[in-house]
Length: 263
Ligand code: N1C
Image (cartoon, rainbow, N blue to C red; front, side):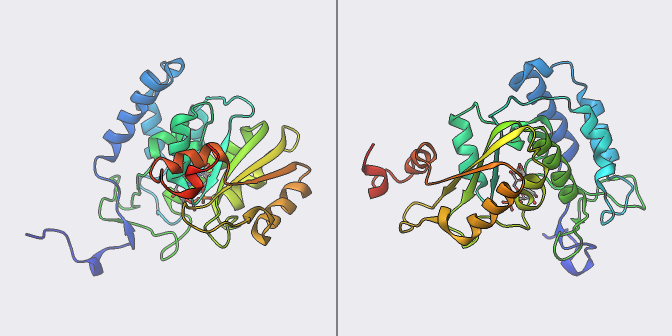
């Protein structure tokens, strides 16, 4: 028996707020601050959840701004060591499989705010103080200044501003444009690195196993990134199919020739 309203009655084209959003965020906050990073055990998770919800509740979900999230961002005081930041674009699963093993490297989802929000959807509505579980704005079909997109841009900017030393970037070499200037990495993170603190951008371009050999590092997409990095006075280094990450891909494909040779 269907009890959901038909799609044409939905306000927005994107998925609604994830069921049990508040409970998930609060639970993840406690998991993170009590178990994963006990040095953060004194953080007030209820206060963090309240700041998160206040950023978007009772507001038009197409008019969210970075400023709405500032009170939440201020509560996060975590620091990340130099040389440990890992950015990525269009390759989320491999990145997290890799950092699951190489736990020294930190992606945004390994920080408190990124961990709390990972894979969730959320939005409110100006006419109520409730979450909208029916639908939320789709970034392309409705509006880009929606609660989710603005959140990721705001925390990605802060994450990039805080980076120092050499930063790592994992990109998807099976795409024609591994470097997408419209992605969060290509539009927010790369331009918010501080050249006074970041001397080198080290890129790993990973291809799907089974796709023929390619040299994305010398392609035009990576050259576009190199130009941006050099113009910002940082050193650009690029490597195709970085072996430690290739080993992770090989777990599911041990018999593939590129996995059998040279181990
Ligand atoms: O747009 P992208 O990738 O280039 O964003 C990835 C880039 C990473 O380096 C992260 O630091 O930006 C950060 N980031 C996330 O960590 C993240 N987790 C989940 C950006 N976006 C993130 N999401 C959601 O996936 C969010 O909804 C955003 O729009 C997508 C980005 O995916 P992408 O295009 O593969």
